[in-house]
Image (cartoon, rainbow, N blue to C red):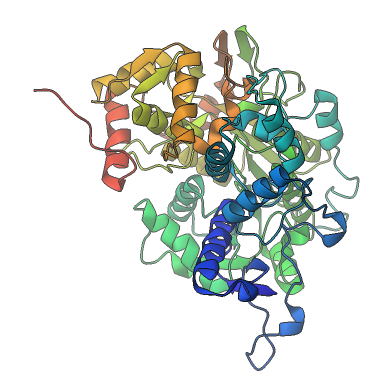
Length: 560
């Protein structure tokens, strides 16, 4: 039996928790024979012309559930017991012994819950890091039978591809080039602009700047039930950061779509309208999770970029302004100097997120070599606004701050941090893009001043959050113990980034001293008045005050 559930589009983790809740509710209130076999989360219910549900169009199974042909049933008592734990945590009716916990919809939080249940049932502490490398029941039971919890090896990174594979991934189809007969690119002023990623916090600030600095109408591509719901999501997201204005909606054009789907999954007429009417694209849409492997990020971060380039080459040539990241540069020990040039070295670029941004960055550069006007912007770790501190709490840096505050401990891992205020990033991109004079350029957007993790820990202490510094292995054991106890630590979903002895290279290189040159950025911003605020205790205080106001952090305990 399949039960469809209509809702706003959900991320994998949200859908998993929803299925688990529904499964638990059904088992509590229904006889066993009436408990649904599956719960499938849909963006919307298919409708007939008369408005009724089109039952024939309902899916037979969820896109994140395995097909019956690949199902191998548990056969031993241990496999059956673990399978039942997985069903309870994931909200599924059955799982096979070779199914991947994460392909079934599991995330780091669900993995922590599952590990706690396994420990309770078998009396064995399960290494969450090893689970991420070997996420099947068969492999889990094999680990349990060994009664050993071998420390993770940080040299192995299951989230990464080999550097040679990255170049293969960055091959741009020959058809994606400016089409003969297409209208030439405009250098502004722009009448209509397409913005992706408008429902993120960087997207909210970009949209605010585009609205304030131009008279353009702006297409916003959003996953939603209809165009009105798409606009609601965008406006509500801007309001979340105090950025919405009453007149905004009149200048926004809601487009229901998904950058991860071919042609964005939009109606043909709408796609053709955007291809004909949009005069510039700012591509900000991306999944920014450091914990996910490349293959889970590829659809959005890589294929989505391909779709943006495809659209930009049709009907009217559209300059593409791509929001990349300083994370595309390779990490190595020692001093490094990174100019504002096209990326070419994939060695040392590790982790799914960094690699997906490297491939996207490279694809945009290739499109530029074929004649498409492009600009690439590489900000550092995007942090709170300079005036209000407003920021998303769903970032690795913010989870690290909160997770360490929850533990009362700071890990000894002194990496460099390039903290770039979100409003500076948005102002710089909007100013350069709307000016239309810097096509073919790459821009580094580093912090006003580089700080190291130890510096940030000191500033947290000054602001009322003193943390005890401990050796990394001690900090790791404290975090692992907290997660196994079921504590809601902010770093739970990033736990696979941490090995028992050292963190994964995704986190950074404590011996690295990179210098990101930004002469071209400074030239492009000359006379604009757009500046970065230094990262000092005064800025960190504004940043923390925002999180206290939103409830993300507890109020600081101050003496005197």
